[in-house]
Image (tube, rainbow, N blue to C red; front, side, top):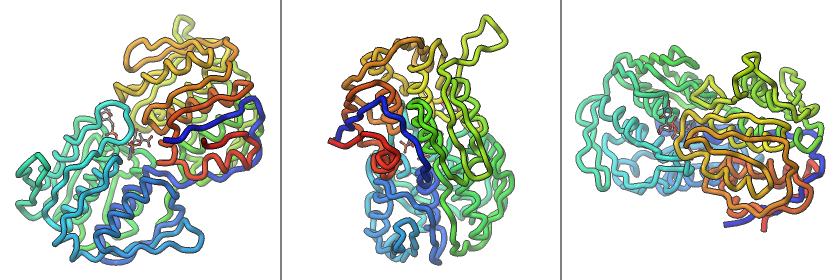
Length: 428
Ligand SMILES: CC(=O)N[C@H]1[C@@H](OP(=O)(O)OP(=O)(O)OC[C@H]2O[C@@H](n3ccc(=O)[nH]c3=O)[C@H](O)[C@@H]2O)O[C@H](CO)[C@@H](O)[C@@H]1O
Ligand SMILES: C=C(OP(=O)(O)O)C(=O)O
């Protein structure tokens, strides 16, 4: 595990281009298994989660070529190996669950005994995923390790999920794309990454209606073709760079193709006093008042709530908290998704911040404290490293964030990019 050494108190300014969205590229990579033809993906981030999926493909005899720009990959699978071999799915990444559907579609059988848990945010269920496989005709023959067999032809299903799960919706889309007949999913997730997968499937010839809504209707086609698709920029990274610029007093511009996804996100950061200017292809943070916007309902605590899209994303809550510790008054953060995503907040006390964890889902940040540098311990949660970084970069002097490696799972060249923008930050 590596630590981040951060010298805070310097403005971070300039122009930056974000990386491709990890949570989009992973299902898009897995969906390449649904076609015999080559698929080319652009704007692929160089992150460890992608490396793990590609290593799995290579173990299965697939061809993976990377263009000179490093960000364009062409993938073509040789399904003989998938039928004969039983290579283990990649370990330690949530997106291992995204291989279940395409491997099942391809081979009719799969065995998995893997840690598909990802970030330590609470329980990372596999039930919704296995239920979808079951509804499409699979039977769980054994569960230590899971041995799952397809017992019938894959036919259209009507499913109403318990909740809008990102990866379970992606599993549904990959099962339904070539099923015979029409499938519907109620309570579908609609995050930008779910939309990106559906757009890629459409480009491969799938028939999908309701993209971006909570009801997906997919009519199966006989075969999907190859395609060329662009991984959208990471809206989490866009917001993170803007927040870093804002809290350090730097005028920072992010050039991006996802401005249309940023409306609510910017509105929530604006509640924390950050000021923005937006064009069709860029967002600039122009200032930070440190003032929390007061609700018209005077007896109410100001709040930012995270929930499934189109709410403010749970994966941006730590960054918003990292901004709020430098604000002048109090605000509540409410994570409606995860029950274990706020325990790290006690680390903020080491910076001199005052926070109160009301229950596993709700945190109150009391502003008005001047922050001091600190040595803090990051949990295994990608975006919490960024939240701690946002506190560290505000404090004059040197802070250390221990075990900061999880950011390598989603944010390539993070330290290099910040250094180019004037930050004093390094790995140790
Ligand atoms: C690889 C990938 O894409 N990972 C993302 C994906 O994970 P993932 O697909 O695992 O997340 P889910 O959408 O399934 O939600 C995570 C957990 O939250 C709970 N839950 C969620 C929604 C809800 O309405 N009720 C509820 O209880 C469940 O316990 C669930 O297991 O979506 C999460 C939620 O946006 C993000 O944090 C992850 O970065
Ligand atoms: C929680 C995250 O990822 P994962 O679901 O892959 O652990 C994340 O991307 O912030």
